[in-house]
Length: 542
Image (tube, rainbow, N blue to C red; front, top):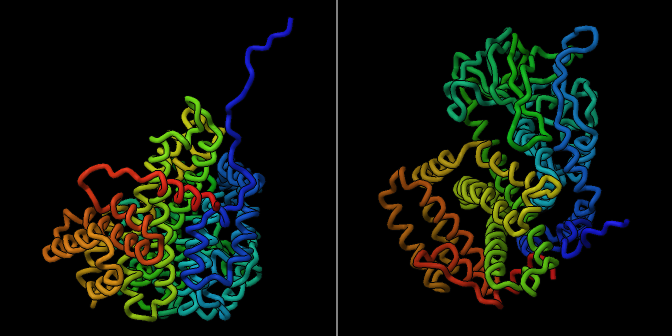
């Protein structure tokens, strides 16, 4: 007897072999608008390669096989090493080859290189996010090292700016490529780094470039296999920033003990560790007491990357959801034809339209920080973008999972991994409250902050009544801002700046839809079927 219990049909195929760049029209437009059109060919090629099923499988494998801590070798000698799955190394090779860690810092960097690098970052985030941790820390560290690297480590600058990934355990000067990690937080303080207890004592002289001995610990020591870490420690002059190499110039291992790897909710492919310093050797960067100033400079760039990374994950979630609804039939129609589903998907697509426009305007501001107004803009909008985008990530991916139904909740699908990945960007480099307090502090302390916003938003004043009303209301609230209102004020500022970009550069219909979605709180506003269709076509590259 032959049993034929059922025929499998109406089961959508998973999304694979798509061009992650060319299918994203808002991203293509933003790259061109913000002066990086010279990178379009590279981005199209990269989008095609990253969108293959083979690349997506590498992302799955790297997370299904997390790194292992190797404390000792077979003879009992201390190793303090980390072993990764081969998929991790392949993904890292791609990121470094595409210079996601150093593109704007090249001597021959072109105008728009910060924007081009941001686009490459977003594309890679859609495949695998854990590998972006060493990339973003290296990216944030290079400008500081270009200015302050001790003389003994000047040869490091060449491999730091190379496009080679080198995982060998060697002194930095002998390697073809280098990565930099960071170790800031301790058990008792977290974001309050001023409470750090790790101490640094000079071996001979004090000051920039001098050698110190470090004793203490770090509760989160990111990417312990990096060639060096930037760490904070207390000196007589106050909290200071140190350059701590993994392998010392004489070839011996530094006295950094890996206690354990963190067992994290997400970000499973990446190694985060707890460490102790047992008279570890480190070199002071800058003056004693300058640690916080250095960290804030690097922190701005890594915070921007948190927003980019969450945006990339959200973009992938929308792509998966759209592809599913184009195939799945329910009640006589495809899901994307069902009126309620169209509203859900269109709102998701509209969110990403606003995020894309604002993030790449912000990337241009980061590149132009020598201009006072652009520096202020980047200082204000970076924490606002990190707060808003990263906070929206979890419910956004949860919505995408609902679109797929039960299959979206199962591990065979990529959405559970994206869902677990989302919270790290809200927490790392400062949680939501820290970001909102930073926005309020910047508005109060930065000279001309309100004038910069006035200039930025006045270009679209009069185009939309909801925008004009919300902008007046926000200014009134800022006359006597209360710390308890920090989240609301930060979210409103972000929504207004997204609206300004869409009203200035997008189609009138999309700009108006954004204002209704984010600035009109009187009730639900349905998106017209025409606007839905425009948003779907732009999100699918049609």
